[in-house]
Length: 186
Image (tube, rainbow, N blue to C red; front, side, top):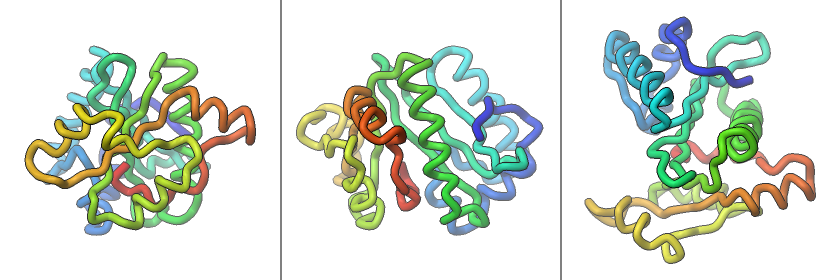
């Protein structure tokens, strides 16, 4: 389902990323294949330095279909960023990827908090996020992070997934990540 990033999947991922319904929601945009390869190299190096964690999302046949990332890691916290290729939307891969990634982050990598920023105009994504039992709207409780996100205007709401709330949900239900396929900017 998830694997460390490498250069072998660059062609497939670049083709999927550039779809007009996917590209606007990708944090690390590449406008050419060569730029995508260069950014993949930078991503791999940044992970080696502990600045981010990046995985390729695979389908059941091992084909790359998107990426899931934790960016801007500081003090055991970082920002979630994920995208799936358009042909894979609505098929449950988002849930599976988040399950696997959150488990790796919280229980293997020592991450304590996952942040999500969602554009205030993206009501659909906000409603999907707010349905998750382990997520907290953190505009007030993490005011300094919220202010930093919105330094150039009132653009984002801030959400927080703390390890303890996630763990409680896993213990209750065996799996915490509900169908959050609408979290395109997460």
